[in-house]
Length: 423
Ligand SMILES: C[S@@+](CC[C@H](N)C(=O)[O-])C[C@H]1O[C@@H](n2cnc3c(N)ncnc32)[C@H](O)[C@@H]1O
Image (cartoon, rainbow, N blue to C red; front, side):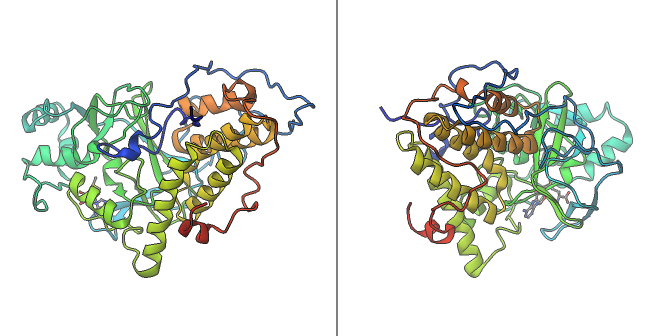
């Protein structure tokens, strides 16, 4: 039987429907259910594990500015609590949100409660939305009706909807439920709410209007991630990477899998959301556009291949390192989490616990930046960071030294040539 590495608890590479890629590792979540509390660190000299890697501390509630990058054991709070973004005209057309000062990756840019929520189709209609809006202030009603409506004069093949419903479908985000990590959303395709592959952090039982977030445009190279906080009933929006002043803040409406070519993404976005994507990545042309397409397809292919490298940890790790380089070149670093956890598993298989810890630490940092330190994934990574031997694949192959994420150069072929040739 092939030994496959397992997807991490909140799997990022999931397509909404009808795609073989989607199912590749969707059933391979962690099969043992680890305690989510950190265990005692079991480092031993025999295993040569480093002791200079302190375990992270986490806070339970996000501050308005809350970077986790670089030094995960400390949380720096930027003193200026005024919004670090403002509304402005977007190059994609319409309005968008723009950074007004540098935003470090991992920062909670804002957290927002929904103005109101609605059930999934077919249980919401123009009337249910109007009835709900009637309970709100005039100011809030005006704010809602000032939002974009992609269904007023839609592209061919898309219906014209009544105004309240059209605005809702254009701007709603999933919130309010608790799906199992592998469970696809039960929602039908609904503009932003229809972003498929919505995992546990989003929930799936209701969709809501978030007045600030409704101004976030889509990008296939997003710099913002959203996470639904069930406890706080808020959506948190985090910077996926360092954002420069003046840069537009964009999330991916296609949720997590934006690894298709420009053509594939364009068709998917137009079909699901009724607009032609004019994001930075889709606007690349000529050689730059081709290279971007090639990198994304290579990442997608390697994602599949890495899942079957359980018998060849060395090869698996080489592929992970290549993917990470490609993701950096493509500025899709938020996908790193899954691959770092793959690398962790290759290392524990051969009892290289020092490298394993370095990889799972990187996975932890990435998951904090994407979904916060209290996310199930971050908590699981933290547990494995404390005790990598707890993983069920630990020691399944003869002992061997692999390498950690600090050595991305390694002996791999250059990413550009490898993206053309198979490893
Ligand atoms: C939730 S709204 C985003 C904010 C909107 N631009 C505004 O002015 O309020 C979604 C709409 O913004 C536009 N939009 C968002 N992302 C876009 C993109 N990448 N390319 C082109 N249009 C985009 C589309 O018209 C879409 O229906």
